[in-house]
Amino acid sequence: MSKASDARRAELADGLAEVWHRIDAACTAAGRSRDEITLIAVTKTWPASDVRLLYELGQRDFGENRDQEAAPKAEACADLDLRWHFVGQLQTNKVASVTRYADVIHSVDRLRLVHALDQAARRRERVITALIQVSLEEAGGDPGRGGASPGELTELAEAIVATANETNDTSGPAGGLRLGGVMAVAPLGVPAAEAFAGLAACSAAVRAVRADATMISAGMSGDLEEAIKAGATHLRIGTALLGDRKAPVM
Image 1: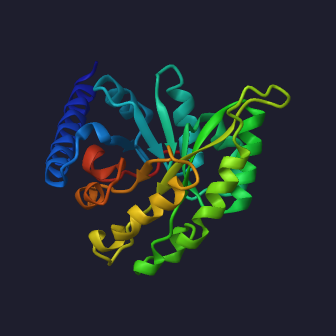
Image 2: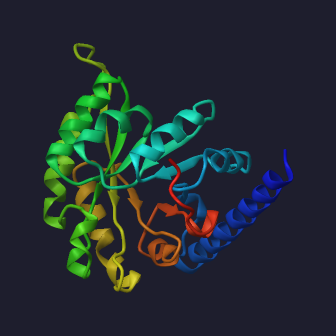
Image 3: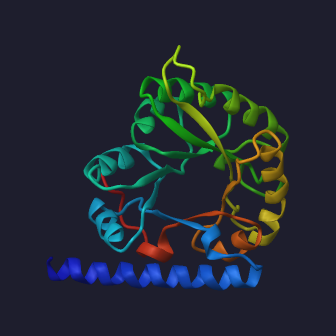
């Protein structure tokens, strides 16, 4: 390993230790266990070499928000036992590509996307976990971030469950979608605790459709403590772990 690689590995090890220190402290304050938390390393703009270094350090869950960056990175790391999370807004014309590598898609927010993802997952004979992105616009959020309104959650959850093929029926292709839970992004300019206040109710609405859809994807580098207090199970951490963003990897 080169000196540059050694130095980067040390930086990532420090970042990983500091993030988990924050998670541990937040869990203690909230009366929760760190075992309830999954840390997703969001590696957008960072090279596949960083994914490999983080893998060596024990990280297994990785997130990307742009297919044109994620697809080649996932291919470059195909020999590693990783779980890829697609965390950005998803257009239907990218579904065929994203379903090749994504194990979890965090940004399902409309019926058309549910059906497109289901069809693509079945063609690849894969079961992909789908999280419904909830808009926090009512808390002052930016509608440009995407997301379904809280009132749409039940319909979307039922649509995802209806597409699932988790039985022993072999008449059609294996695969499809599995309802995992909800995802939310705290909007700029709104206190994170206020923005996340409705997450528990949103999660409950989805769990009323499927009881084991318990995933709550919320919290990033600046608000992970508030997200943990609000019940988050999956944190999407980029800057606090990898450093300030670089120019996009192409």
